[in-house]
Every structure is written in structure tokens, then in C-alpha cells.
Length: 269
Image (cartoon, rainbow, N blue to C red):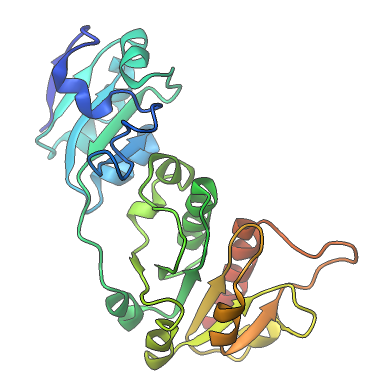
């Protein structure tokens, strides 16, 4: 089980994995850091502990570590217990959730592995906002999407903010890079998927109409501002839209994805 270690030393070197999380060039979950996965709050920490990502340590106030005791029974890592004040000095801000866990990254599946066992997948192009990535993964987990493939220009799903916004679901929904882009969409089509590009274009078909046709579907979603590139749209099998009231022509990408995921999941279940 986890080794409970009490410390009130904000400079304790054993806490370095948790240090200065608000300093962009030193954060361990960024490219210039150590590539660690960071979970915040008891719900997300539980999902991390149950995932394939190897935990390294926990840091939290006594109450939160105690709440996680059943989850830590078979986890041989240190759980550092400290005060909220010391914790804030270590991480660089006050953490309302009261507990953090860090883990090493796990090997990701290949895109072909995800395609082989999926019925509905999401493919993202240019989704660079960490909160939108997190929300997309949370929606995917909730609405029956079997995996996510990342095209060009996407943010890393394992950044701390993405993990937090997803409520840890980025640790549960398999994802992989799809390269080269956009010609990698041929791999998706070869695996038996119809590639449906979500766009507000007037000449697109309604999502419900396309979903009713059944079959394995890959929903292609574009960036927060301009949406899908012309090259990605041209590489899709069909353009689909969500019918909206007059005067509204678009939704936030995570919101649009949730609507589309629901329609597609309903069609295959």
C-alpha cells in the first residue's frame, strides 16, 4: 500500500514533481518538463490510480489522502501529507481540491489498434485549446465514443488542464496521433469507417440523416475558430451539420461534439 509520509517542509526535494505548476517553462506536464501526468482532486486521482499510467506519488492534505485510502491499498508509492498552506507554496497556487497525484506516461496505442476495435471514433484537427480537448474527452467517455485520433495542430490531451477538465477521462479513452495529415484519413477509411466532417456548410447533410445509415463512423472535428481546413474537408466522405435556429451558425467545438456523439452512439446501439 502507499507509504504515508508527513512533511511541512515546502523545500522538501521529494516534492519536486509537484513544484511550480503555474510556471509555464518549468511545469512537468509540458514539453520542456518531464512529461508527467498530473491529476487534481479525488475523482481524477482515483481514475489515474485505476489507469495504465504508473503513479509516482501523491501530495495532499490529510483529509483527502484519507479519502483515497481504499484506492491506495495496492499502490506502492509515497503519499505526502502536508498542510494546505505548504501545498500552495509547493505547487504555486491554492488548490481547492486538496490532493494531487503524478504519474509517468504510458505507451499509447497505435491508431490502427484503436480503429480495429472501435465503432465510433472522433478525429480532431487543430483543436489547440486544452480545456476544449479535456471537454471533448469527457464527452467522448460519456457518450460512447471508442477512441480519439489526433490530427495536425492538436494540444496534448495529457496536459494538466486537459486532464482536469476531462475529469480524468483522457486516461480512460484511448487516443493516438493520426499521421501523416490529412492523408492518414485513408487509414481510417481502409479500416471500414465512413469519415464524416462536421461543418456548418449549407450544402452538408444533417447529422441525424447520416447517422441513421448506421455503420462505423469517424467524426472529423475542426479547430475552435476556423474549423476544418479545406484539405481535411476534401478528404472526408461526407460533410454533416447540426441543424440550428436561424441566426446561429456554430457551436463551441466541445458542445457540437457532444451533440454529434449522442446521435452517432444512438445509431449504433
